[in-house]
Image (cartoon, rainbow, N blue to C red; front, side):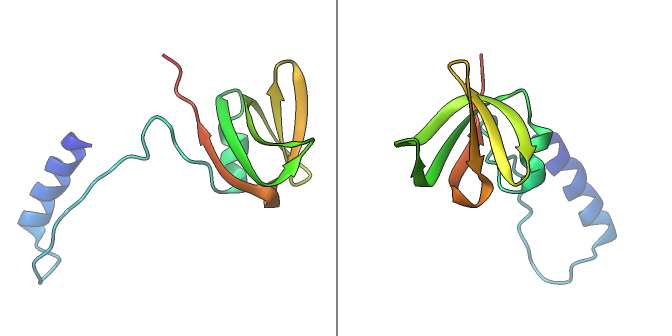
Length: 100
């Protein structure tokens, strides 16, 4: 992010496309990237994720396991060798869990 910020800042200083004063901010979603769009759940298949549901399923709201993808508007996640199919519309929060 720092390298991109310095390069873009230099180009903006030379080209001067913005007439007003501004602050350039470059950021990253981080290692524990949040998942929002349906495409995110396919793109990060195979990664460990944490998912919190707004509506409990099978008596629980929190799931941590390997993301298997999205099929028929259901997010598939394997938790302790059991596959859960979670309705995409019931997901309150989801993020990738960084493994070190």
